[in-house]
Length: 94
Image (tube, rainbow, N blue to C red):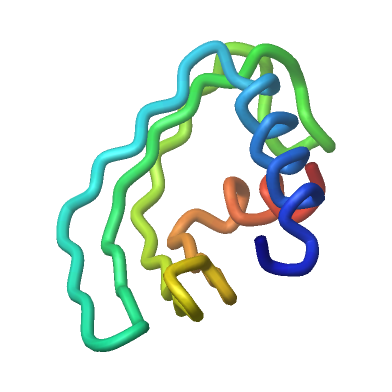
């Protein structure tokens, strides 16, 4: 596992727990060597108000790109970029 994997796992669990529905659709994926680019769309419905950004029951949809680098068959780096500033800030704060 890459350094911080437990932190990453905890972040994913907190993010999913904040949503009553979370859908992720992979639109396109390109791989070359140890690098993978993933174009995705995500839709989330939130259980409660969060940080004054998102209201309870609100649905947000965002498209994004994740750039993932592998070393020895394991994720070494994962960066994601979203086109919705509120959803991006939510995921940065959670």
